[in-house]
Image 1 (cartoon, rainbow, N blue to C red):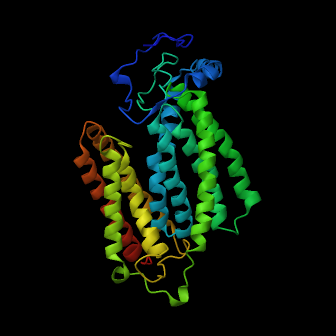
Image 2: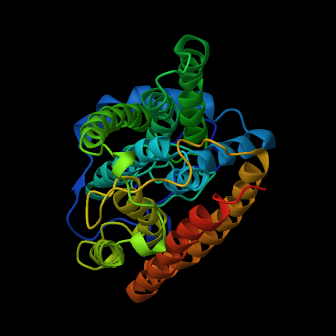
Length: 368
């Protein structure tokens, strides 16, 4: 099944046969990566893979895994909730727009366009078992979004930010960050260099779409603090919150259920994203179900070191629990545990939303 593929030079393992163990190819609703593009990029891909995979030191393996973790979509999904918890509402809303676009846009080609990964084709040594489609590299897309998009979000929400002194150097550092992410994924044998190129393009498209969308949404979300109602439990539109959580449950079911099976990760991606989306819609920018509200903390003002450290500890614990639980859920959901995935989504989304509301009302409003 590896006919037509050239094993990587210097590989001691030889071609890796295609099998059910090493790939999770969709059963329906997908197109194969065009052979003409595979041939067009073959020399470019194989040359770079050969050069990058020649380095095989243990420290590089750790580096590859760290870069993979930093640029995974789950980490990005938690950032808006973390920023809302600290009171940086405008920045959190802007980052939330970026992450929502990243999750949705990046999954479309991953689901509907199938390209065997380099190790599946016997063109690279497998150093990590990623079994989904290779095209494009979501890690590289996230690297672009997290670096370039993050800086643009900070500039957009903080007009007084000294762009030349802070933003420009960070933007310049985003280039090696993206290149190192691409190198890590290529060295692991799970992405072609051409996957990384398309990942960069996809990331730039997402940043542009997010910037336009956030600007449009911000124009519709002007809160008059003079007439604002106080933010407390009694002013929360509980019916709208329950409705939005229910919509998330429906989306998780559609994403998991056959025959589409759009995204096995949907329960924990939505579980991490929906609390921030609901908070943004009902508290930060209450355009539905209620009058505008004042915020407990405006723009992060009054956030002290103890506040920050406490949120970091809380966020770290939640990340470990959510990602660890999601990994177990993901393995079982792919075997057909749709109900398990929906239960996981419900528990995570409700717990995180309640935790965020309690935090903002009773912790961030307390002066230590």
